[in-house]
Amino acid sequence: MTRAVTQVTVEDLTTWWPVPGADSHKYTRGVVGIDAGSQQYPGAALLAISGALGAGPGMVRYLGPVSRDLVTGHFPSVVLADGQVQSMVAGPGWGSIADAGSRFRAALARGVPLVVDADALQLLPAELPPDTLLTPHAGELARLLKVERAEIEADPVAAAVLAAGRFGATVLLKGSLQPVASPDGSVRLALPGPAWTAQAGSGDVLAGACGALLAAGLPAGRAAVMAASLQALTASRFPGPYPPDVQARRFPAMVWELLAGSQRGS
Image 1 (spheres, rainbow, N blue to C red):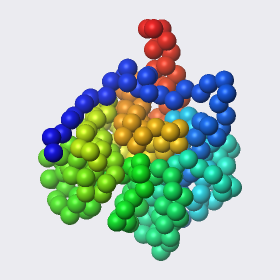
Image 2: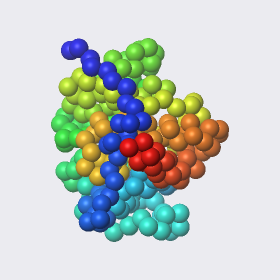
Image 3: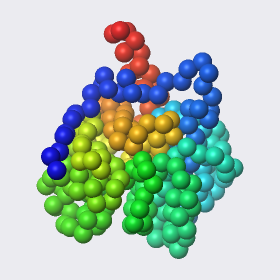
Image 4: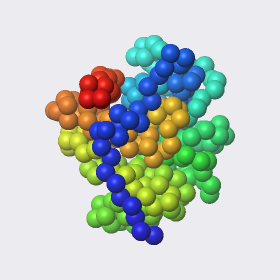
């Protein structure tokens, strides 16, 4: 299949970004459910939540096992009660836990667009729901495709296209290039950013941001390339060894800067 590869632009982001209107409320803006973290990796839950909140959802529901006090102590707006969601994020920080399979089945059972990240990637069923987004790094994708990591890194676009076709899902291959491949073989490249983002926790933040944009009703490919580009733009705007949670708190200002710039240019 011939690959159609396009580079996303800042203008694309300003056109696509879901801006609330006068009649919007928390449910129309999108409710993202997050099942992340474990006793072994509680920080993954906070990082995924921070990414989701920074992308502007109507509500974040935390549906994982990490302490309620820890979650609400950092993010008092997060809802801990179960209820309706328009997307799910599953996998960040699960670790090697016995209940990973049941957690993934519960996420799938909701029947909403799904971000599959980190530890949940090894639990993929034969069929995935529509608008599923897989967010592996090169090592995780190598394990999924049963090839060497060097093969993924040698041609990340081809690897993402292969995975998207094999699993019938959109694939965001995290790394320096960050191609987003759809099952039809088309590819969008996220905006590039500095290598400062290559640190633990950046992927958890990215998964949360993807989930928020999926909850807003964006298709998986667009949500993925927008979230990855937002993270890259923020790191470019504020370069340096800032941890990913600090950069996630800057996402709203970055979004507003994009949208305000678009209005000035119109």
